[in-house]
Amino acid sequence: MVPMPESRPYHHGDLRSTLLAGAERTLREKGAGALSLRELAREAGVSHAAPGRHFKDKQALLNALALAGYDRLGQALDGADDATLPLERRLTALARSYLAFAIDNAELLELMYARKHEPDASEQMAAAVDRTVGSLERVIADAQERGEIIAGDPQHLTLLTGATLQGIASFAAGGMLAPEAALDGIEELVHLLLHGLKPR
Image 1 (cartoon, rainbow, N blue to C red):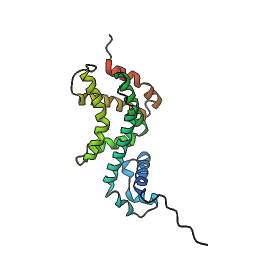
Image 2 (cartoon, rainbow, N blue to C red; image 1 turned 180 degrees about the horizontal axis):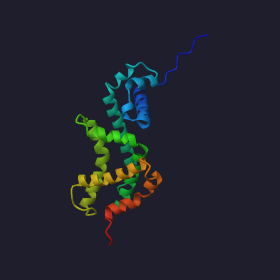
Image 3 (tube, helix red, strand yellow; image 1 turned 120 degrees about the horizontal axis):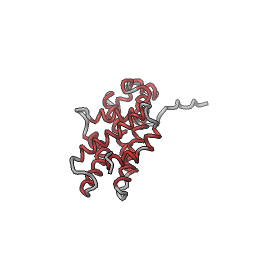
């Protein structure tokens, strides 16, 4: 009887995605400090040197993880955006999509923003940021041109909007606000952002 070949935990060419999936799991469960290429290799059932073919060091792994996060966020925002909607409904859809991602991926989002500000952040990272944060900035700039939003630096207005959304996401991640309540409150939040608190 011919012995069966030993099964491998991944197919040829899939080691990179296997390592990234393992890294994201570790990030969620234990934080970035617990990430180790050697440990990820052990979990994947490969030699400790094998990850080196895909990531030269832990920093390269963190960069790839952040890029993968930006790619997923970009897909989520693209799927939510509808340029034919009136501004308030369009911003509400984008804000809900961002908040859902932020709640489900709190640790990953923190890593994404940390890598964005690293001095050695690559052009690839800048393009990924532009595809996500930049898309919201372009929506705001377009609305300014149509007179639907106050004049001013669209980057600054995007920062204020993003900070508000991220604050809600942090409350949800920290247990101060139920995720469902955070998502249910998006319509009101966007309305208040656009119209302010002052009575009319």
